[in-house]
Length: 142
Length: 142
DNA sequence: TTCCTTGCAAAACTTTTGCATTAAA
DNA sequence: TTTAATGCAAAAGTTTTGCAAGGAA
Picture 1: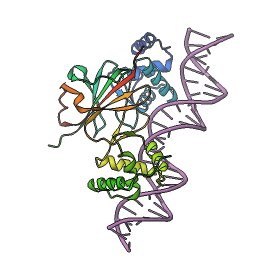
Picture 2: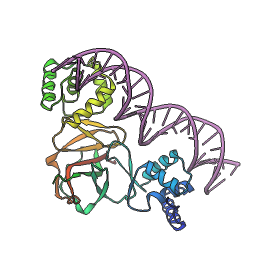
Picture 3: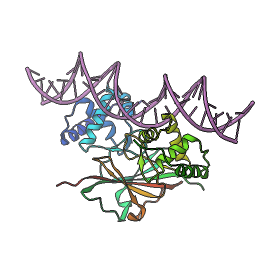
Picture 4: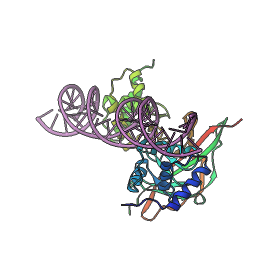
């Protein structure tokens, strides 16, 4: 049984929403408080569960619409690491991911831990919008 | 209006299935013939359409089950580049991808065109099972 | 015969949408 | 008061599953 976020955190979230040009409604602030409380990767369903645990009354549609809104405004990042569902990343700084294919766990890889000594030139008429790197992990076979 | 694949191609596919330990039923050979006819990325729906165009009578369930079977046996590779659907890649050699976020187009990046001068060590107890690199592209501004 | 595969329909899941209601500026 | 956001239910889209029927060994 979790608790609702402290008022101070809610005020922080509200400020961040406003800073991104998003109107800070009660539901949006609560959703932000769940996802932005730490660097983490959560699914929409997990966020909804977190909200319900905290006593917030938010519908599933609002969770999805709000996460899309946040992603559009660059407040969060949406990841496609497996086909099953979207993962929402509270860390929007450039970084990469480990993905444990056994457990499904997602782990951040700091950007400095990967260096490219060669990258292909983008096709004519296009430019690079971003680089997604997922290092798949399996349990070590002794 | 496409045609059914030539018998020679079907025989090639049959051989490849047997080589992977997959029983070469008529439907499986036809599905393989569609996807393996060239290096390409196709969705399940596109493969089904290709089969129907070629006059094959294959159900959607069989397409999905068969693609999963092929992927399990390493005959094809399943990609998660966007959350919308799975893409099946006939190229199982190591390589990376360009993904045009405007058009949705997927393009292979040969493995030699990317070099890592630094990669993180996998967490204790795990080993690297593979590396998925997706370079997102957008139309060049101006 | 025995086991595996297929087709069909239905189910399961995730995500989006339409619309009446409610809240915010 | 005027506009935007929310909740609910239903719809949409992809993928999986249950089961009866068909085919291969």
